[in-house]
Length: 400
Image: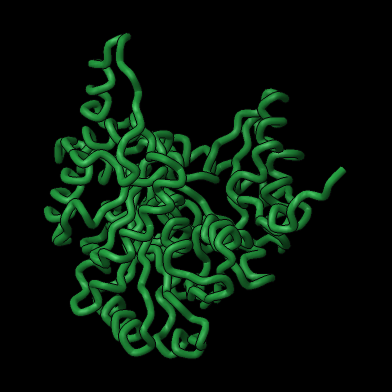
């Protein structure tokens, strides 16, 4: 039999999903699993988003769309961005099959093989996978739980810049940490990008989820570097519609958009129904967002307080997104998360986390950390924390 590709063997498995078989087996044994491992909100998709789907007749032909996406949708998105202080035209926007495809197009368009991107870690695990697909080297710069995973100092960024460095990538607010970067910090990144002739890529999928009176500042609002800024965005979290697989790539660099469109042509077109639902979502009332915002604040406050009351557990207060990374008094988070699903339950129930090592590029980091997505209601979070406390009492690798 011919050998399979080396790149496939080197492709990292998702730390968010690789424990799914254990969860499935637990469910087959009758165990209820509280999923805190993945950013799948239990918030309802806005009703207005689903209205267009009711109007399709049995004779409807689901056609290809323009490879860049429906023009009406791109124009509507340009209006959305202008409403949040980001001045773009619809021609600055490409619709993609989720934010992941937007990032893949970005890497393929910006980087030559072997070039480098600097990313603060821990970072969204799919960055590893997409970098591997594009043959791009990730150069991590470590942030720490002690200071809430704040952006590392500019001096640390400077130390990692080489003649192969092509870009800096940030997620703001951060998945997996919930850290929020300030305007002042982004201005410093702007200076680095200008000084070293770099691109600045920002994953801003969680823009609406910013708490405690803070405000989100976009890289698209930075002055003087418009031609080297790329924005990655998505409908998945903003409108609670992960399954539509609709994202967007935004840049005022016309040459970048022109070249990225070639990759869009190669996959023909973005999902038709995803675009229909996405465009309608932009008409969601302000009340929808306020209710969602209030719910996440309630969940976050409960979860962080409950975590820090458990002996040996520490979780900093996140100011954005709907994740936190918690430090647990354990020997190995990969083993612990597997054990929760395969060997432990409390009255027929258990919990599922994402082991943090998968969010780091530096080997050995995150061994006593897990990412928790507070995407369940407060009652479920309360029960999950009861289960966690009992699990830590029974886990053989708990540090006492």
